[in-house]
Length: 263
Length: 174
Image (cartoon, rainbow over all chains, first blue to last red; front, side, top):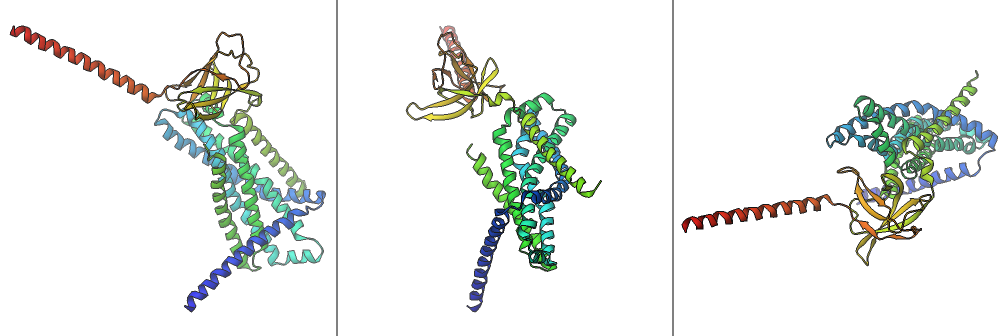
């Protein structure tokens, strides 16, 4: 009986702790974005962060996009040629990459490449008391450190996603048209006939905006909220990757159901 | 070159690459042209059966795309489908006796609407209804009808030959 009560107590503590974490995360977001620091400073800080989060993630995004497009081209050709409809290959590659794979895979890679780095960096700043000393000097770390990182993430992921999609479709083109010999004209014309800009491309970009927001928010919060020890940083980094991956996949389902679910 | 300059330039290139990717997505991959933004007006058409017609299907005259299907509704009163056709605004000379048919691109391809203009002097305006329509060809129904006819034909010829032989037998007996 006593054991049961203890478990119940533990359970209650867990729930209050997660609720408190959500509250702290919301506060962090509001406090850091409510007062954007003066524009001159934020731009130079922002450029540095876009470099860290966006430009340095470019290589992995381009390579993964290329290989994913090539694999879809190969698999799609195998399935479609069974029905004698290889000409629909372009449509299949473009739609699957624009709607789902582009936003999701780019966001997962972004969480692993940039999100974990953000958490580790901010966690280390906290552990070595850089954040505390900044506060003592009268510099608000939320505005100076957190806000530019959040904004850079919001900007970088949609750009990375668009680059991913273009490179992926190009990879599918290389395999489908150049290697397997699908007729080039029908490849592009079928693609253009089936891809609607306002529907497929635009919704993919909206997805990547949402994912960029979620991943950066989780990453920054986990770093800011980490225990100031080595183990705390390692736990926070793990949590960033795990939580943001789950959040991306769950949000993707919800967004897909909202955007494409009704037909 | 100082380090900060390199960072600035690479971020600039990164943003530029994002912009180029956006343009490629718009122009090359979704085939967005000025035509896609053309103003349209809506005419309606009733069909007994729309087959596999979907919204975003093409509307054509003589194979040239002049609009798209924007909506498909069910008419509860008449048990028919009401299809909304968005036609480009500069095609303003569709005669009121234009007929609409649901056609198939290739044997198993996508469904689209083909319009055939008539000879009237008056033209369809926004909100008008195309009365003369031809439903989609449902392959299963077609095959079913064909098979039924074939079987019927065979039965007929089989019966008649059977009758002939029995008649012959009767003749011989006589």
